[in-house]
Length: 440
Image (cartoon, rainbow, N blue to C red; front, side, top):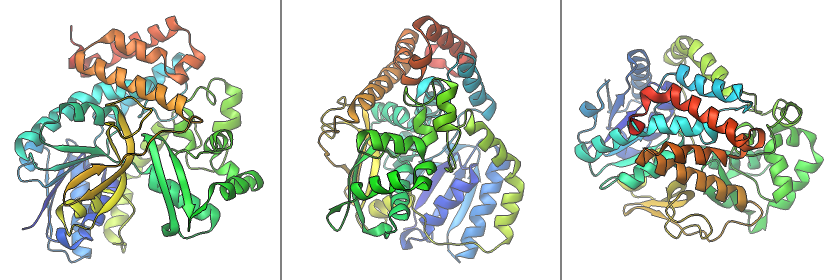
């Protein structure tokens, strides 16, 4: 029987086309129905055309449907993918502008820190509505989330899920392995690793090749090759300080800490230089999304007219679906799940990013033990802040949001308690239309 995969937020057509390309490479999904959902008709139509192009190029017996109504698409779905942006870019931009007004200079702001918390508060009602529709219309489906803020959204959905398996996926873990392979000039497939922590703050606890620890060689390359160091300055500073490499890019990671963005001197030293695609420029995410929007039409035209590569990429989703819904080949990946005795020294029940095994039996998270002391304190704090934000969101507790904000490493490095209160109040006032859970 053919499978049905629903993509919600499919107007993100570059990501959509890559995920669909990967899914259709597996025999179990060659004749699948790919159901695209988005509330933006232009983006939805672009994605439909891109998917149809993939189907024709691969001579697949699959079909693509497109709708602005997810309840129309969900019945009969075997897998659901979420990659939506709940509000327009202008809303997200205002978060960053308010934070910058108070001296909190954010790079991306979609994961944690004040902007990430308010993005979560606005996105959670949308995601919980989607979860309810999935549980009603396709209760046996596997729900894979790519929407940020990853950890807080997964934590909220996993709290409320009754019949649907929900896990969150990020690109940063496998992206790091590709990076190490290039730096060390070794085949990527020969690297063995254990990675664990929380989303965008997970660390490679083991990094080996043929039983040999790769960290000494990686440290030597970082210290001796200026180009290696300059490529990812913040991550390399953390590696040299702690002995472990973090999964997330320098720009993103810089905004989760108190060390790199609290004054202009440090921004210039760590965040506004280097060769990485994201070196930490303030409001970087806005410029990237604006350029993407400006190039939208030309990029689609190019994709529709030029030869395309149908080779499977390195995203997790297609392999997870294949392990559970397809030929049953087991697949190990890093997923965002609740911490029920998986990480010994992070809060029980919090969202953690750990190895997960996908198979015909579903998803089985793997116990990893304790996070090393060298990287634990910031991770514990960030996890606890996420727990506070999720609890506040689900209960409508405004004061708890403020209390979560005062412990944010970036905000607290530049503001006192009263300034954080003022910033929180302004963020609440702006976001009011999208926060039904806080309605008075």
